[in-house]
Amino acid sequence: MEAHPALAAAASAALDAYAAATAEHDRATLAAVVADGADGTPTMRIDVLVENAVLAALSKHPVNVLTEETGWVDKGSALTLVMDPVDGSANAAAGVPLAAFSAVVAEDGVFTEALTVWLDTGRSWWAAAGVPSRLRTSGRKELAGAAVSLLRPHPANPGAAAAWWEVAQRAARVRILSTSCLEGALVAQGATDAFADAATDTHRLMDIAASVVLAEVAGGAVRDVFGRPIGLDTDLTKRWSGVVAATPELADELVTVLRDAHLAARPA
Amino acid sequence: MEAHPALAAAASAALDAYAAATAEHDRATLAAVVADGADGTPTMRIDVLVENAVLAALSKHPVNVLTEETGWVDKGSALTLVMDPVDGSANAAAGVPLAAFSAVVAEDGVFTEALTVWLDTGRSWWAAAGVPSRLRTSGRKELAGAAVSLLRPHPANPGAAAAWWEVAQRAARVRILSTSCLEGALVAQGATDAFADAATDTHRLMDIAASVVLAEVAGGAVRDVFGRPIGLDTDLTKRWSGVVAATPELADELVTVLRDAHLAARPA
Image 1 (cartoon, rainbow over the protein chains, first blue to last red):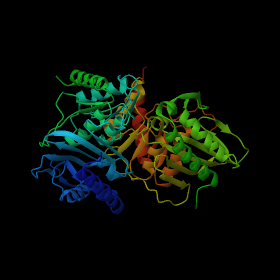
Image 2: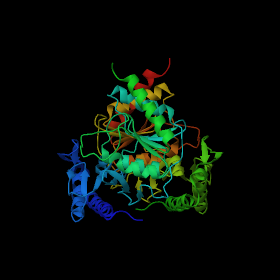
Image 3: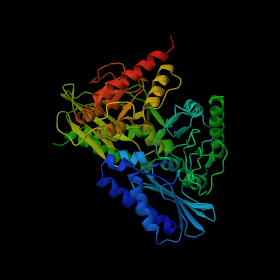
Image 4: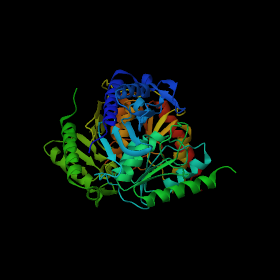
């Protein structure tokens, strides 16, 4: 089984556009904020350059597209590509070689397959829901001893800061790679045990959608810290605190630890 | 000007051995602790496999070698290679693609050139002290607004935990890539503004030696949080809290912030 043609075309266009953008422009140019994206966050030039190339490549494909910058492109199809053309934009613009293209295909609202591509190396992770895969998580069931990737802490937010620190205290190892989709893929391949947004509600759908398919196929589980379902939603103002874990047990423990620490520490 | 033949031979052997080790062995095998290194920390099999290959490649070269596992190999030369064959061993063993070979050449005790090679991609950073280089730091002089890489926090150590959190509060962005030499190289190339061991005294000489040459050639500076000089020393029990920064001003500010927070928080 192979990737859906629209998914493959989008990834290929992203790889080419990313290579061209990083070769042709300096850091200040790539990092320049050129607009506010459809998701309400600032858009860097690197995001625009890659997203425009991907949308052009998708123009011939009869699929709807949901992206962080352009938003919802409705072609009346049963298929929707939920996509982050450049996950880890700050890394990409600065020259930290950890950025990813990541997308999931939703068919009548159900996630059916996902592809994450490490834009700096071309390495990719693909899976289709319900189809046997070579991806296999580490299988770890407990936070004690786990290697956990986290979004960077938000010290100004007492609840989120407490939640972040609680995981840092309980885990054996903490990383911050600043690229959610790549960190989710590393959980799916078993290189790290979990990845979480420590109750900051920073995640947009495209930051975690691909990880849902990749992690579940590999034996893992994806949750939201506050119990919100993670599914196709064209409202780009929605946020999640995603948890991608090697097993359902570890996902549940992380959710409990993060939520309890967040609740205990937030101002009354 | 080119890399010293011994440095080039060591890096080449490390690349080959790393590729072979990660292709032939599973994660548990690579991560197995097989000995205590000369530096007093546990040695994983991945470290031994790569270090042995590097030492074999260096057997024909008339240079002394100082490594974390084997220790001091004295050949009576004025030249010494201070080397970490696999920086980021935990990444390497787990399959997180962020590990580096890193070494510095010391001539009569003075660091003269350095080479860091990203083992997962072959990308390299080389510089000779006093020789113009294409490497250029970001030039940032203040912690406010800076992107800083840190070693993972040590929550059980009150002084170090306070120092870590203080930097996280003041910086614009924090990353933990778990590979000191690669993070030092990213400072030298201007992709991040600084990298620090937040007063945990985890750094061994080979974790920061190459960054001294790479960062200084690029306009940056390297300090120890507690003011200890960073130079050739065959006593592998010594530790530093290294700070690699884009400018001397930023290095000094980081040292002050880390030391003050550490002093204020440690138990009386």
